[in-house]
Length: 286
Image 1 (cartoon, rainbow, N blue to C red):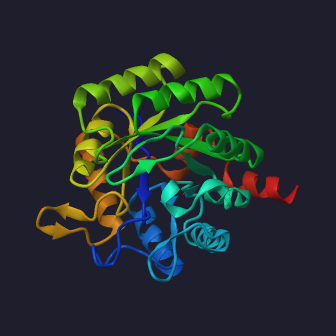
Image 2: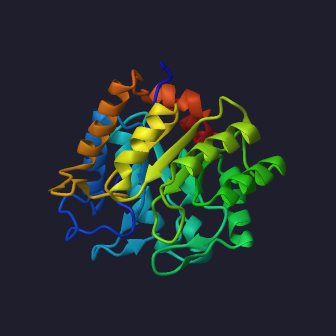
């Protein structure tokens, strides 16, 4: 198999702290440095959250703007994906950074259980986030915590609420949501291909100790892979991950074992139908 594999690095998230792993980047400068190391290791998408100085989650557009500026300066061409997840804010504050026009943004299209709460994504908020992404020409990454979320993405695409072919990420291993199940994983792939076409790109993410397993499954099955300290702070039971880059290098090794080249940023943008940075800048200046 020679299809290039896109590696997404989820650098920070909303939950891991320095107490969990000192390598978790919290400040914008730490995030830029960590992203740069991961970019050099082979990651071409950065999935980004921002934090307050006390490490609590934030949805502050100014922090997102500073992070975007730093990544664009130090990682030219890298695909920037902002999180609109529910831990960072409530209601439309979750999309307050979308006017900054990142290349991509996460979009959860339905609700589900999380470890200690319900992850609420009410239809009116989902519709509003989708409209904002269309307005600002942002490609959504559909975070599928359940099969129904893939079917909902198809419904939204058919109604013109999503531009182009959705990029769907299977999220498995969140407690009380979809567990890591190979039959379900294989059916997710079947569903994406049936609904959107055989060549539709997809990605998979595993939480905690499941990260490595999902990386292996996704790469071997022809999909793309997400890694990073947001989802998992360890290399194994006995060792903390020293950096986001170390987790990226582990996926690179899996790609090598499966004879799959790691996608460069130009290839990743082509696969996902994203504009080149120069084209994006021209659009902003117009």
